[in-house]
Image (cartoon, rainbow, N blue to C red; front, side, top):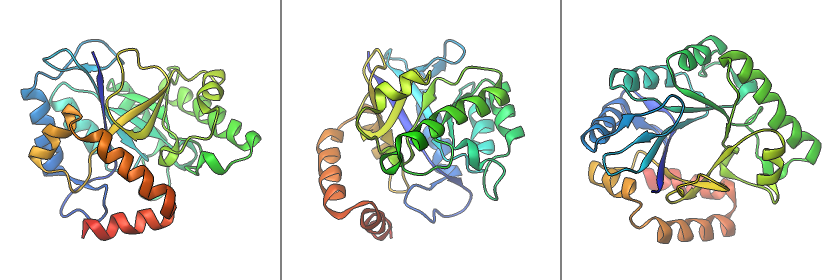
Length: 241
């Protein structure tokens, strides 16, 4: 069976301000839709399971402070999330504190790394990249009392050889921003399903099924490679409006 790895960024009260913002109302609708599809927690720290047998992870990038609320909304429904944390940015304005990360872990959520500084891996020297991989594991293990198995490269940008390098640092799973469904064994660089301000209720159901993702992913990657990251982000925000 495949795995659907949903990706959320900010969960906001009121109107969405950025492309990746999802309102609290929409987020709760998504969770209730997942429950209707049989989403349940089977094992501690493993994937959730949908009624059709597929695995499910509900992941959150960037450790923004609204993720504390996201964790509570999941807990009310007996679900857990995968919170991917830029460990060197904790406690900054608008971000989770170390104590909040510890609290999420104590509530049964999985904590993973999103780098140390939240800078792009593909522009780093090897020694800097090694620091971005090793230090978050040490920091987050200290906060959670658990080994840190998950890594999400900032921006989903993966330099050549990343899979072997992260394995050498002890990570087991690498979630990228390549669009699609992950395989049964969760090996290699894992694709994901981004949820944004543009995701309608019907669109959420299609997203969960992975429908149309390969075609869209190829188009996105082509545009992004031609325009570059900065212009791509500007185009995306303009499209949102």
